[in-house]
Image (tube, helix red, strand yellow):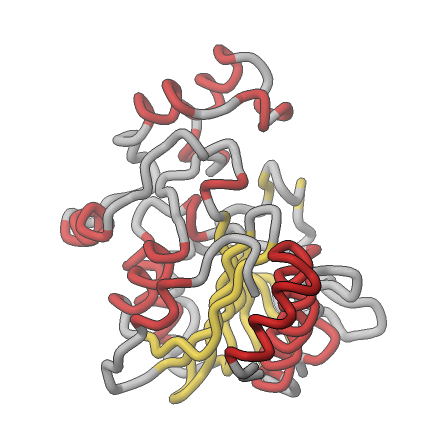
Length: 279
């Protein structure tokens, strides 16, 4: 929605800056969600991690109900996020829908999935737990059909226990890719132990309990290897060769990116200016 500058000026005088922001977000938030739903409706998807409340009917991005089918990939049949998964029961993601297939494989190695198998890849608060995110995005792109979509949700550092940590530079993630970094990597552990805000992460327990959980990360995958703001998230997705179609951020800490598999590299710079809380 393009609003003339004169009307914006009048609205700011009448409503004040906070009022204008509230109205703007009220208009554009539903617009962003509807845009994503319209792009994804009726398509087949693979979710990395999950099931995710954010994609459920009461979630921020109610996507499950409009997709034709959703399969799922977990790194293990038992995780601290899902408990034990009964593979023979399939992936239960939406009441009233047939379960999807449950896959057990790494996010960076979907070798059991053939090229161009899915129209959508979903990943909510997952990629920050992956030590080699570019390799993961390469795999996700491989299994997408031509012009297939990636719907990615990442935590914005400013709203999480990572707020003290610096944003991870793209060059570091490129080095992780070049070095074939694997999930037993603890490069970021000293920074995490020094700057992780335990007051914002009660399930992590004491500092010693948190340290022990981090040291066992190859088994539980709880570490945030990399830290994002919107610019970093956009830069990573662009580097992986996706064309962004929509970027939104939702309080308290969600960066949401809808991007398509594209054979062309185009300019995604306008998406870098999105700030937390703006949609």
